[in-house]
Length: 318
Image (cartoon, rainbow, N blue to C red; front, side, top):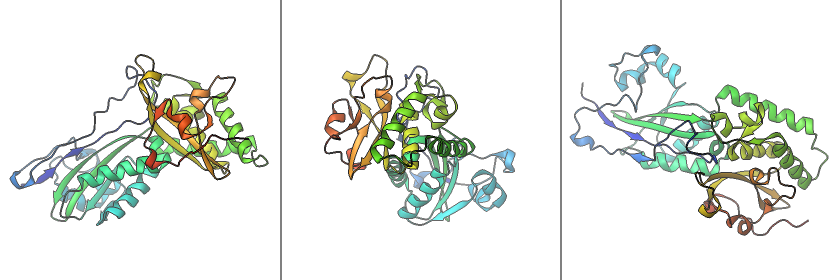
């Protein structure tokens, strides 16, 4: 049987403040493999649209046969969603990524393969949804053309699995109840939780996946900037403080030899204004230097895509 396949593969690496020598996952740069479908009689890559014989699908199965196999679709993907618009694709990816689903399948009904659309939607979610930004390490996908539309097979790599994440959320709730921040002012809540994260955390060099996740914060009190920032974000949100998880790049002249420039920190909203704070860089300091700074104050050491984040016009003044 002749089949037509358009293969795409895309990865990105999140902020981690890690040394590339010890980080266990080597993800390639984003790229797109473009195939002229009109000249293609047969093409298939098991690396892009995976088939899982252990779940009842023969290795020779066509995508059409897989799509029609409800038991297989449920076992691998949970469901096959039929989508007809860019907006619906964004909403659906948002829902599945928030659930930390590794395998996702979509039947995208369009005249053109949605390569650029997928890249655009992932980037938008990465820069506007903080918990997705903080926990999604990378993704890959394959697209195969069928008579009914484009079958898209997504594989998402997270810093935690869904079971770990459920436990993390329970522990974050418990911490807020234990600290009892209810009677504190908004500024006092930020100060107490900022110090709590730094007291509980020890910076390590990112050798394990959990060092990049709130799971490392909860279980061992160890991690890199990603773990500091996402843990603080989750605590602040539970305390009723509007917060953002920020990903950016440290300027070269602020880095030691061998260090990655990828970095993560937070923003908080107090009295109607936004401010930056970096618990990783303030850890073990007697006087906080990166607490409630403006965009200008933070820009000396780093850059970030400001169009995706609030503006911090002035530093905080008590």
